Amino acid sequence: MKKIIIIALMLTATVTFAQNKNAKTSMEVDGVCGMCKARIEKACLNTKGVKFATWSIDTHELKLIYDERKTDVKTIEKQVLAAGHDVKDEKATDEAYATVHACCKYRDEDVKEEHKG
Image (cartoon, rainbow, N blue to C red):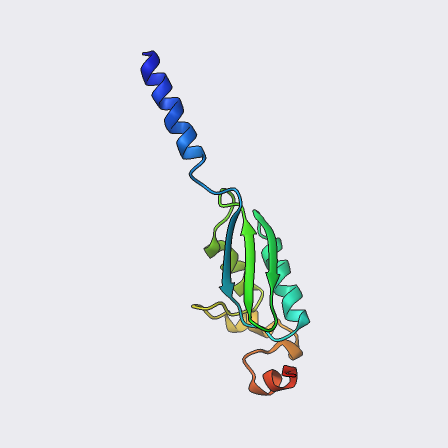
């Protein structure tokens, strides 16, 4: 009986450590300016389990550190989409995109041109 209990405890410990407390990932997110940066990062940081989020205006790369026990990449992507920003494989809804400021309309070629430089 003792052996069964010890084996059960070892399996429980293994399962507990299977998820990463500080997972790192990056993803592509569309945007054009500092207001976009603030909105994208805020959407991520308001997601339970996200510890760090920084988005680059130049590369459109969003770097994240998050607790896999509390959230996952799909959940974070949903928050970014809800904030009105496209991710690599999915577009924000028209309703969500309509909520971004006029200078943040990253799908508009004229707005993109205005932000180059």
